[in-house]
Length: 71
Image (cartoon, rainbow, N blue to C red):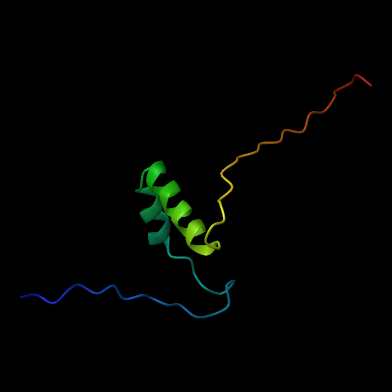
């Protein structure tokens, strides 16, 4: 009988500005569908908030309107 598979975290320690960002991370997330990306973000947010708190799922886009020439 095979032993169960273990997930081992990979840690990189250092200053944030000195750590090289792995291009594999970007390639991994770009290979996922938008639905999978949103699901991953939702999971992370929900795991970081207190139980009973609801996640704010609103999206606001503000566009600055300028007047050209007309005063």
